[in-house]
Image (cartoon, rainbow, N blue to C red; front, side, top):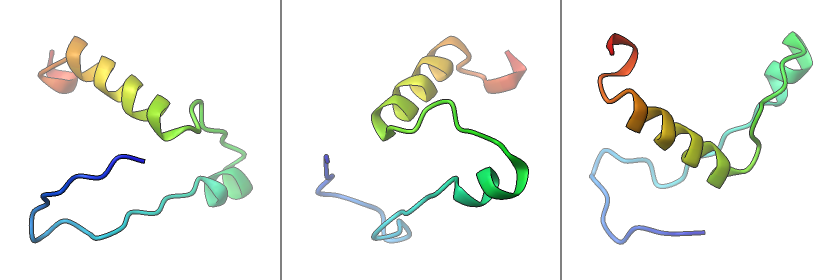
Length: 55
């Protein structure tokens, strides 16, 4: 786990997420379950589309 020594006052101290409810209620399965994979694919998408869905 990597930790940052600086954070904004508005940043939460801890983030916790689970896909459990979506899996149970919707039958949805996440493509990526490891945090590093999620971040890597989000970064790849952002680099390809720096303007988001607009471009």
